[in-house]
Amino acid sequence: MSVRVRFAPSPTGYLHIGGLRTALYNYLFARRNGGSFVLRIEDTDQSRLVADAEDDIVSALQWSGLAYDEGPDIEGSFGPYRQSERSDLYREAATRLLKAGHAYYAFDTPEELEAMRDRLSTDGNPSPSYDMSTRSSMRNSLTLSAVEVDDMISSGAPHVVRLKVPPSETVTFTDAVRGNVTFDSSEIDDQVLIKSDGMPTYHLANVVDDHAMEITHVIRGEEWLPSTPKHVLLYQFLGWRAPEMAHLPLILSPTGGKLSKRKADKQGIMVLVRDYIDAGYEPEALVNYLAFLGWNPGTEQEVFNLHELEEVFSLNRVGQSGVQFSPDKLRWYNEQHLRSLDNGKILMRAKPHLKASGIQASDDYLLRVINLMRDRITFAADIASNRYFFEDPQSFDAKGLQKRWKSESPQLLRLYAEALEEPAFDAEAAEGALRSVAEQHGVGAGQIIHPVRLALSGVTFGPGLFELMELLGKETCLRRIRAAVESIPAPSPQ
RNA sequence: GCCGCGUUCGUCUAGGGGUCUAGGACGCCGGCCUCUCACGCCGGUAACACGGGUUCAAAUCCCGUACGCGGUACCA
Image (cartoon, rainbow, N blue to C red; front, side, top):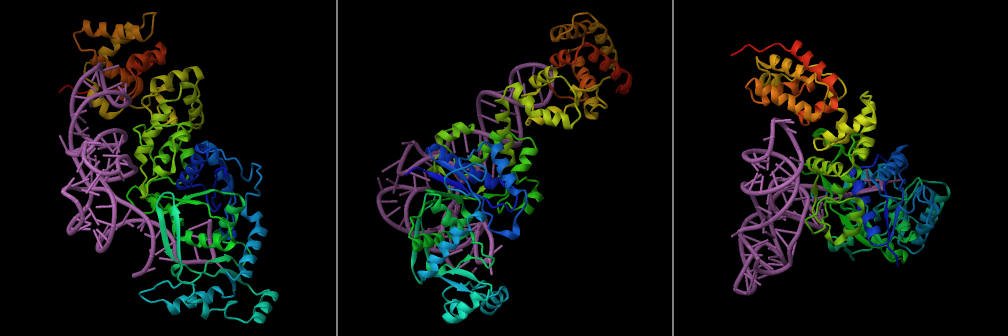
């Protein structure tokens, strides 16, 4: 049987980095094993739907390079791929369970459920569940007569279908990441299978769909581990073979604990893939980093592109403990991947940001800027943030002036500017001229280099000075040097 | 509370009874290179949660404790 896995996000929000990691592991597993990767939209919660969430998920996956073989927008033989369009299947399964006595109708209103929890909650058990110990005191087809039940249903009384969990049974399954996991059925509640609006819950829908879509491996976040025994029971009652399970360690905040949206905001961490796209991250950097969050290849190689990951990924090298998200390491990965790109590609990445910054320059010029800056930037967008490549500096770094602008600087710069008037102008000529001025006046080259850099860029760091000069061109260099000499006040000699 | 799952440098991790005076990566610190800043290179900092077993031998196996995370919905 060929491997089939799915990524099954709920369109209740934009794609989260944790979701992308789950998608990635599924994708890699499918590719490594020559299987299929399916995107299934789990839109069974009508009340929490976010209109453009599905679009966001699809486009974020596309950006990441995780191409799926089947999905809402890619025909496959197991569609439709939105759960809201598969209602009949769930209904059918529920009916079978009902008939076999593995499920029952319940008519309890939300208020009644709340009242039950209030009534039964104790210090030892603050959240009593709807299970075999409480179901007999509730309004359901187990406690009501068949006639009453029929009447209520035919009169349209709101009702749900609940799983009838058997008493004291040991439910065991093998998790590819964690080994054998065991639960006692007495700890499992009578999960709602069909909600009163007629939609299935995740638990029913995912079992029905995974079976119908011939999913062989369920790879999902650890938050699903406690509900897996319910799914195992469902497979059993429906007479289906359960897929292999693999529960991935959760991604935690950099300080530990849940990476909730609120906490992340507070810590300045972005959690939506959309945010990483907008911030200009390299897709392969995010993917590479996420791959290593809970998995490693067992070798010392750390930098991988997607294709390389596809060749080495395996579930049995996935870790078991929660992993803290590290923005620093992600940055490092971004630098690594950025540097693997040629200048033309970096230019393409930088274009939107250049445009947003109102920078106009020829591709030829931009390529030369990139060539000088590529080892000094973290994001392609950083090309747009060093404005001195595109316009004269408006101000000069105060600390830099203090350190590098000496009382003799204006005079040395004047002399240097004169020397630069020579017709030939390139990095070599600029350097030759500078060194000879320095020598003639008995000062170190640095006495001229540093103030010139300030004059040209306004800052004390950047590419090699002479390369920068060649890039800016003679006119610009002379103009900026002379402007600086005019506008920067000489320091009081100490 | 109860149930489940975890626990090796600050972080991601290697390791799966002797080869571990515990290896790599990020970060941090120092040095080299150098006109600056980076890159690169070299070096440093720093960990087997705790307590009991088992064994000639335990980071590795078992038990307990502590701590962390998850679940405990007509949300996924």
